[in-house]
Image 1 (cartoon, rainbow, N blue to C red):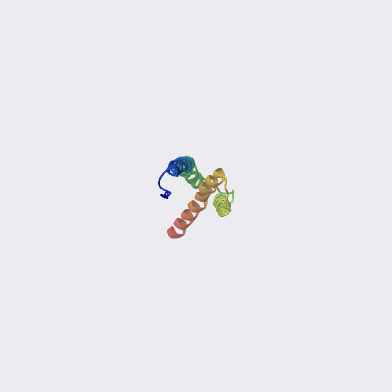
Image 2 (cartoon, rainbow, N blue to C red):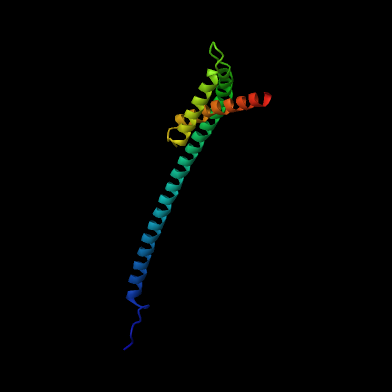
Length: 138
């Protein structure tokens, strides 16, 4: 009597069918995993782009306020004196600038406060520049 090998006869059809079913399930799972990974990457990319846009707006706002508002305001404030000639404007510039420096060191998560801190530091920097010029001119 001849023996049947596992690769011949009725068992072969059942094995092939089981293997095909397993491959379909494996392919479906692999495809689902790839779809989920792609979706996750797309979400991360959207978040990154939104953050970059917001960071750019923050930078433009900060630079504009420093140039248009803070620097001229610090220069004007530096000229303010009491009736007796005491330079109170310089002290105000220094106080505002130091407060802004302290705010900058606080590492706040609020964008508006970070912009305020960056713009406020211009008062201190401008005052230091003006005071340096005064010392050099004397």
